[in-house]
Length: 140
Image (tube, rainbow, N blue to C red; front, top):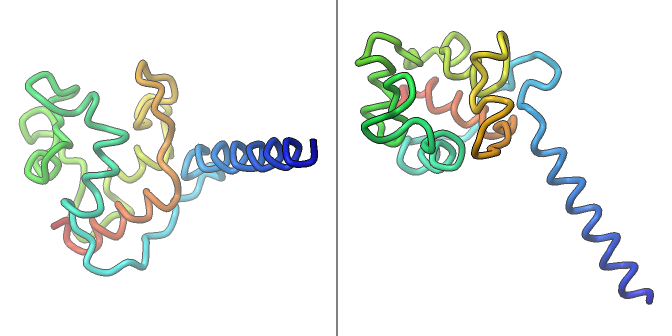
């Protein structure tokens, strides 16, 4: 009985921690700081985040808004055949993608959207911070 109670309590704590991680990165309305990690690259650090949260909608020939986030080239190009840039290398604070993934501003622009068919939750502050560091370090 004690073992079952201990397991149940451990599971509840784990679920609670998971739920806390699913809060939008900017739950208080401020932009999370850039990560202090050095040498952040698309292939190693950013692609796994985008693969989990973005590429279900932003990849392939029918990518939403013409924005492909499954490749570095597509990400740097932006949406609608390059007409809508989502980032400025070296300036994460003013890059639209950062505000979108941090859920700052108009909810219509939040990514992933609050209500989406794939039921993908918002990025964490750590994930947004890593994207910020990547952009600030030149988006390579």
